[in-house]
Length: 301
View 1: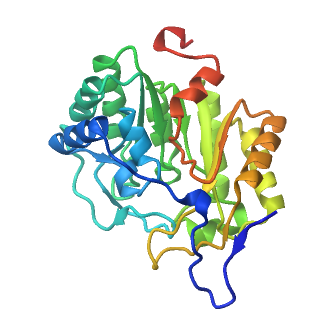
View 2: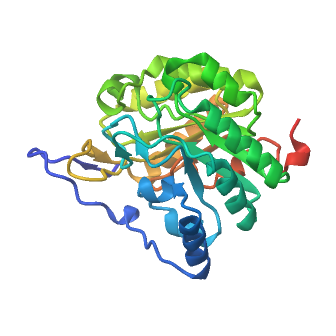
View 3: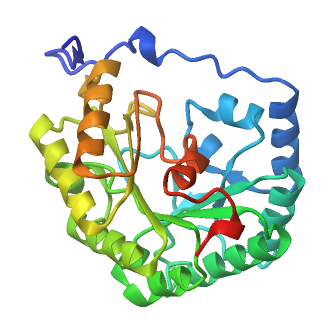
């Protein structure tokens, strides 16, 4: 298959045409931007430099990022700022819920920075946000894209007890590359997190980036292990290097290879698969619930 590999000098690769997108704008995009700014809220759409931000914001959807916009980890793939974050805001849960209601969201996606400075990894704040969303947006489904909570099962279980409809944790990359790509993260613990999510009754979701130097057989092995852990929704997308200081792109994976991986993942038993160069964890997030037989809170068992 056609693909672009890193050149022998280690120079950054030029993006192929299939990765060129128009971020655009539009009236709805502006409304969402102003609302989030007025509420002092952060989104992974902006901090993570998501290529789908224009499309999602024009459709009136966004992924709220709670616990601030400064992460205590420094993962080599991530564009989110790292350092010493501020204490959690007591008003954050209400602001997220008010914004979700104002945006008339039917499916609300929430994620967070890693907060290794907090004893519970931020679990209490997560619970407050989910409760506020249930109160203010009772008809909306909630997707929680969770951190690993520093390997503390009690923190994860605390959030899962609030019963988000989709609970996700991204494996990000294959086991061999995890130490180089993910700061303080462990591949096997991420699988344990996912198994606990699956056991909670929530729709269990995970995601991977491709183009970091992984081998095809490693991708397939990771997919098999995700499925064995109970994951039923998976996303596969192209890794894009945020700056020169981040982990380099080793390869641009062509669309037809993503398509082949999607078919293979479905064959393994995943109920919903998003795979493509521009796919990110929250892209078309609400479709996963429909694929799993849930379209509204009234249908959640």
